[in-house]
Amino acid sequence: MDSPTGKKYGVLLCAEDSEYVKKMYGGYFGVFIDMLAEEGETWKVFQVAKGEFPKDDDDEIVEFDGFVITGSCSDAHGSDLWISKLVSLINKLDSLNKKILGICFGHQILARAIGGKTGRSSTGWDIGVTRVQLSSSSKLMTSLKIPASLSIIECHRDEVCQLPPKAEVIAWSSKTGVEMFRFGDHIMGIQGHPEYTKDILLHLISRLLQHNYIQDKVADELKASLETCEPDRESWKKLCTSFLKGRL
Image 1 (cartoon, rainbow, N blue to C red):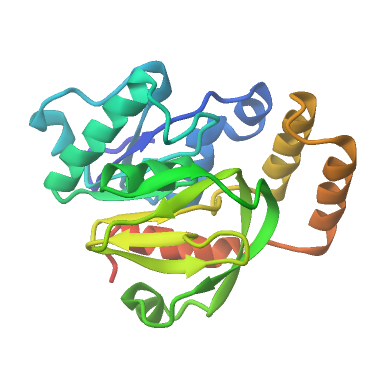
Image 2 (cartoon, helix red, strand yellow):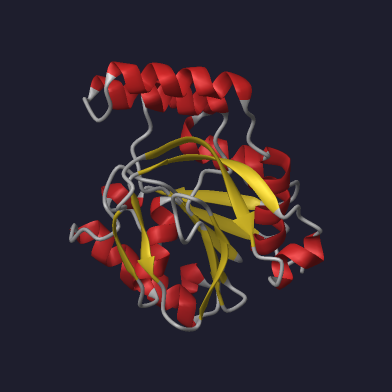
């Protein structure tokens, strides 16, 4: 999506697109475009998991008003070269006070980059539609009149274990202590997937089953549970776009 006027945003793609998501949604970049993009904006994707990063100079980075870091099959606490390079990029963007929204893996790698710790969750996989509790004291929530709790699609087994003192926890759930956090006015992480549809989650459940991450019984139970619940996608869209585009 491209326009010569308006703001410019980058998606740092940390996962490979499945053939299904490419066919149905135009890849995960297309999924984020559908949730976040508005008329007059320019959006560009960088496939960072494949080593494609913004140029290592201020000239390209300063053109962008904000960045979104996506989910991934990789571990945010890993030592892959591209992950280390992504941490360095986050530190640079932080120093430039650029808006950064991190989703799932993106949420975790943001926490790592600013001095927090990530790792395997002690409660195991969290897959499905989870209700999270939002902080009533957070400026973000009160200014947007967001409900006190929201349902969101989750698909993760890692989590943010510890945040640095200056970061603010703004949402939590019965399974995950840090569902959302903010760091200053320019960094926000969300453990769940506000961009996902239930269709995408069903596809992921099938892939997890195929790779023996979950068993048949678990997959059947997860699929059945999705028939009775819905994520609050419009509220999450409002929250994400308002943060990324400085409407607070």
